[in-house]
Length: 357
Image (cartoon, rainbow, N blue to C red; front, side):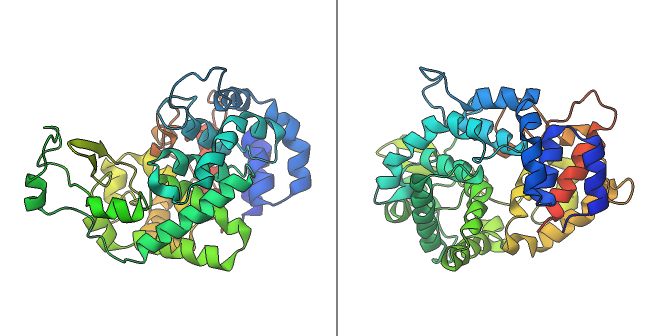
C-alpha cells in the first residue's frame, strides 16, 4: 500500500510524470489522473519520447523493434511507460499504430515463439504499455502457453555436451570453447520458449486480465526462473543457437535476477541501473517478491533512506543515456535534473513503486 504522506510529498515536489503516476498508480485516483493528462502530455520529455515511439515514413531503420537507438520500439515504449504514458492516451496508440499493425502476422502463426526476439518483445512491451489489441493478447496468451510448456520440463539441461560442441563446424573463434551451445532439438521442439528478459518486463501485464489459468501459468514460468538451479545452470545471455549448417546466433536476454546469490556484492561491483530496472518489473510477480533475493534487495536499499518515506540514490543509478532500456539505460522518471532535489524525488518514487503490491 502506498504511503500517503510520501505521496503527498511527491505531489508537492515532483514534475508532471511522477505526479501523474503517483495519483494513477499509487493512489489509484483516476479522476485526479485525468485532470493531469494535459500537463503530462505537454511535458518536454513526454513529447520527445512520443516522437521517438512513432516511426518516420519510411522508418529510420530496417529493424525498428530491437536495437539500442532511442527510436527503437523497445527503448521508446519502455521510456514512455517510465514517464507514465499508456494505451489509454490517444497519442500513445497513435504513435504505436505501426507496431500494432505488424502484430497481426505473428499473432496468426501456429507457433508464436519461432521468431527470435522481434514479436516477443513487441507483444510484451505493447501489453506492458496497455496498448489494447486483440492481436497482442492472442500472441501474448499463446506465447505464455509455449513458455509454460517449456517450464513444465523443469530442467535446465539445455546445452550440448563438450564432445558434441567439438563436432560443430564453422564456429566463430570468439565463441569456440567459450560459449555454451543450446541443443538444436530444443529449439525445434519449443522454439525460443526460454523465458526472456522481455517477458519479465511485459508478462505481468497479463495479470490484469484476472484469468486464473493465465495467472497460474505466469507464476509457474516465474518460479522456473526464480531458483538457484536456474541461476547456476543458465549462461549469461543463454548462449549460442545453432540456426543452420555452419550458422549460429548469440541468443542473449536471459531473465536472471542481477545479484541473485549476493545482492550486496552486486551493488558494490555490478551495474546498478540494470538491477533497478529488473527489480521494478520483478516486483510485479508474487513469486519473485517471495524470494530471498527480493527481500535482500529491499533491505540493502534501506541504507539510502533519508527521512521517513524518502530515499536518495547515487546519481549514476538513475541512468539516462542512449542504449537498451532493459539494461537500465533509461531510468529517469522525467524530473528536471537542474532541480536540487531531483535525485530524492526519483529515488523516493522508485521505492514507492518497488514496495507497491
